[in-house]
Image (tube, rainbow over all chains, first blue to last red; front, side, top):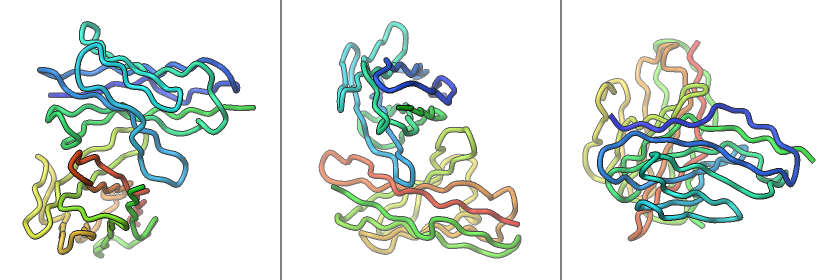
Length: 113
Length: 115
């Protein structure tokens, strides 16, 4: 069945460091791919998405490119801030929309001043 | 922005009792809501899809008589864990679909501990 695999955390970085959180997926066809972020005490929020191969999603300085050949959707940010500390979830949907999301385990990011 | 709340945020109950968790869309109407369960260091797993005015659709392996879902209005869905046991202890998260783009908006979750 469909699945999403994320790198295990926690990831600990200093402010202004470069961030990469790896995400790979297994699915038939062409799923839509998502990154969600969960700040402490809050619900998951959509960070960015991509719906077809080679699409790049971007938001708040974060980027991820849909790589069909490597079945990956790695999250990157050039310079992290303390306020980026959160749990990040990679997810896919085969329906093309937001229904039936399949999530990775989540990666906790801690950014220190 | 779209806000989804859950109540309670945490609950402790004794084995054999039932617990109800509420999920509300505060500033929009949602004909469809989802219930997820999350174990420590594991993925969110979809339990069921809740549609206003109709029966919920449960994912394979989820006991519908154990996890009762009611979606009686466009802003409220409830999950009742019946005859709870310690293995039901988990983090339960709901989400609601909003608008034509039908993006999912998530609640902050409810931590259930069964003693």
